[in-house]
Image (cartoon, rainbow, N blue to C red; front, side, top):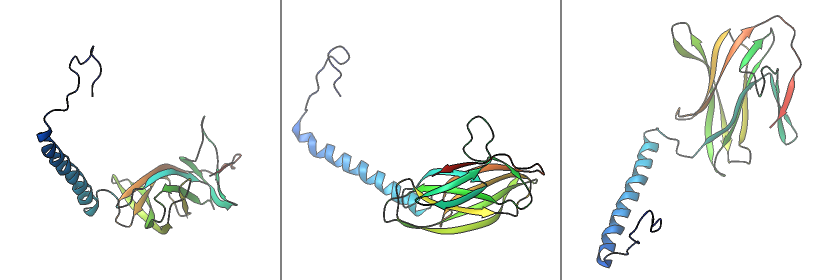
Length: 190
C-alpha cells in the first residue's frame, strides 16, 4: 500500500516480472493451508461444518406462535428488560428457553437445548436434552423453544448444541421460588 510521499517516500514498484510465479505459488500455498486448517477444525469438531450464529436467546414465561411472529412473555425486572434472567418461580410455572439461529438457506441440522443446573459440588449437571431439527435458514433466524417445569432453585443454563455437541451459544439464568403474585407481564414479538 502506498500512503503518499509524506508517509512513504518511495512509490510502489512492480518489481521483476520473473518473480511473479514464485509469488503466485506462495499465495496458493497460503490459501491451501488456510482452507485445509478449516477443514481439519471442522472434522475434529472444533467448529461446526455449517456457519451458525445465535441471533437471539432468552428465558421466558411463555412462548407462542402469533401469526408470522413468536410472542415472548416475561415478567419485566430492571431498567432494560428483554427476558427473565432472574426467574421468580411459582408453583405451576414453566420456564421457556427461546432461541433464534441464523444458518445458510438449505441447511438441515439437528440441534438441541441442553438444560443444566449448577451443582453444589461445583459443576454443571445436565438435567434434560431437548433435540429438534432445523431445515434451512430464514430471515430473523430459525426460531425454536423448549420448556421445563421441574426446576429447582439455583443457577441454571441452557446450552444450544449441534448434533456433534458443538456449542452454538448459551443462556444463563437463576431460579428463585416465590409465593408472591405475578406482576404485570410484557409480550415481545420476534
